[in-house]
Image (cartoon, rainbow, N blue to C red; front, side):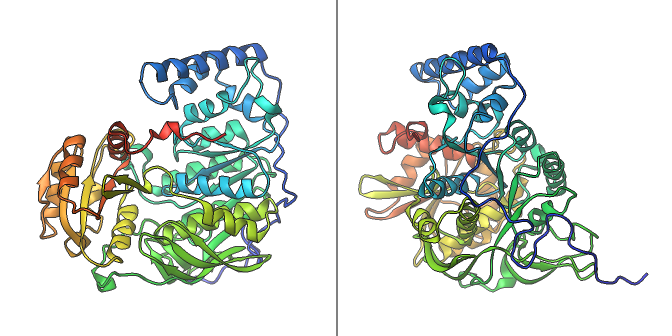
Length: 510
């Protein structure tokens, strides 16, 4: 049978030439949706119990109270997030994706504030339902009502697996999806499984929910290809340098997690591929292709780990923007935030200033002074993320002192076989001294041995590894720490314990 191009009209939710299927409300209002009645007494009890748990947790130094209060509150009132979320006068925005959730939610917060919104978010990083519940209840009064009458927008970073339950409870006014890569296969499953769960969750939302999607990720862009009538705003990169850090493109590890068309399952073609499966894609069989983004970037000039300058294009015009974060992947995060700004009617200069003002979230390119040295934390928890961090390091002159940390706790994913797919072959060309640490420090050391340059030191204990790596970092230099998630928390906690930085839960929003 001969395949012919798909000449059907675009499916509901796919892009028009303007990059948006049905233009979103740009009045600046994100008013909440009316909800069924809920027991105020039960909600008040849940809020009181949750807040008391948080106080006790901090007093006993059991943590920052970012999850346990919500867990306790949900035991009393499972409907608490929906009840409190419905009180948000400006509604909520949910941010999910494999990489970039924390950074994007921070950028979105800055853009909304620049647009005049009061914003609450789960800044502490607890992105399961219990974390969302905690974020809301700490802003509630004893009677179970949000303080200030709920006159705020809320931005929630949400875990990929928790996404369906969270969006069902919150009924958000906008959803931002950054990308979809292979990550924690033992917990999430393959990317197609995650995408199908997301698609089902989105199909149950009201048509007032705006989808803000990465046009350059075929798995994400295809989420708009459904029967629901809803506004969809796409963002993407029009052109970008292909950075190989002095190596031939064919030498780089290929980590491509989406290879086939979401409609007909033919193998996709790429006219430009920036990294992994992110780029300009099309299906040669049915004609399905990358939608035209409404918010775009071109003229991208990376400055290694110092930041990136690019031309930001919105319906209002073109302006030069800068994000103080490394890598092309952070340009995508900035574009997602700019797309949110467009949906709420923020002026382009305000969006540009908000993006430039944003500083790294904890562990995501965060810089910490340690005496006469600097530590920079570069979270990398899957092959694509790791490859992009190593690529950014490779753009810098000279060789670097590295502390590479690999752990296999539940939040990391217990299956660490992904390290064999990551491009650690870059390490010999960029490293002066390497220490490995974490619960799987020896696995990582073995992986590095196969690159031809094993680590100079292996130390599973985070505190001792940090001390050793700092001792072997020259004065005035930077120690680059590349950890998985729980390893990042442990190392950052060690730096906080030594007095070099506050604990992450001490950096509160309003």
